[in-house]
Length: 332
Image (tube, one colour):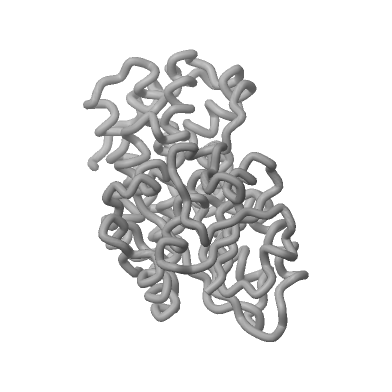
């Protein structure tokens, strides 16, 4: 099969390599020049200069070439670009066959606040694609590409499609489960980024492991409340895309969200940190979307709201921690 990976960043490269190791022809598509080293030296110098990629992996900046004869589309781009890139892809997809679609990002659409699988369904008609599958769970790209043990979930309402990607990606170091609760999995995957920013802020402010454990626990309660209100299944939040991804993202400087929060906590201010940040940190805008959605749904999410106020309203992180600790006492 031909796999088209839209995006040649760290995570797209790591997942694309898994497809290539299974014998599929993989074409990475992007706009940058750096990943052209995939064609000349079989490495993505921009992210993993020490990892040789299979010879059946290549890179192009020509979307027509990337999509020609493609069987699988992998969306490995930031959530804010999903809609625009999907529209570009739609114009070039053939009408002679349906493509399989795998979504890798964790977030919401910036315009509609919709989950990313819904965005892809809206833009790509059923006549041109099979049911959407999302690959979610606790995973750092640098560990996956170095074949360190990792477990994730292929999530889709169509279990047949989920099993297809389960078989295409699984290996001795990469185990894929299936799950049909798309709502809960996508919500958990997106909202854990906000809690990770909060965990980083607490760490940067000098909080101990007691504080982080409490924050992550109460953050998980917020995610669960929001998810259940949207029709998710409770058990999903106990799985890989739920507590698994939350634990990973809230406990490591490898997490962009946690490390951004850490810098904000150290400075006790978000403005300069955000001004100097050039990386995609999904939790920043997710905090805004989820705060707006929670308010409209009357779902109490004080931690997510506090993160939003620090990032967008200029509130001091230390002040927000004090406010959270001094809220009205209640049962757990």
